[in-house]
Image 1 (cartoon, rainbow, N blue to C red):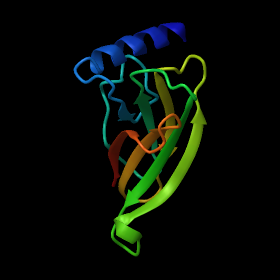
Image 2 (image 1 turned 60 degrees about the vertical axis):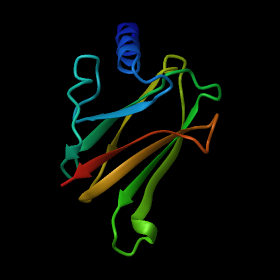
Image 3 (image 1 turned 90 degrees about the vertical axis):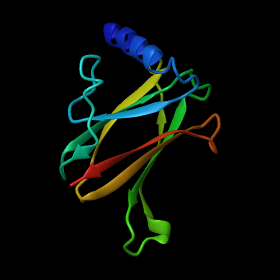
Length: 133
């Protein structure tokens, strides 16, 4: 686990070197490891696990992230978005610079992930879109 953390930290440092204070979210079909972190995809099948990794350029003081998932659509939804998931996650000691988990979508559509820090809840850390078809 320590080796994973060190490799992941090096990846985050190299990935974010061009853009300081920038957070990213990466998706994959398999559990994200240092070996497959760059093999990400943004197109998935219904019922398939969507593994995601949120990178953090600096530690979060409150150690809490708020993750929201919206479904983009125009059918009977206000402004074309429908909130389908919202969760506050508590970062563990080894997760100062990242958070990883997975999500399963059973309906086809376009889904947007948004991540906020409890330090600055009005400032979006990162967002990204996946497609389920």
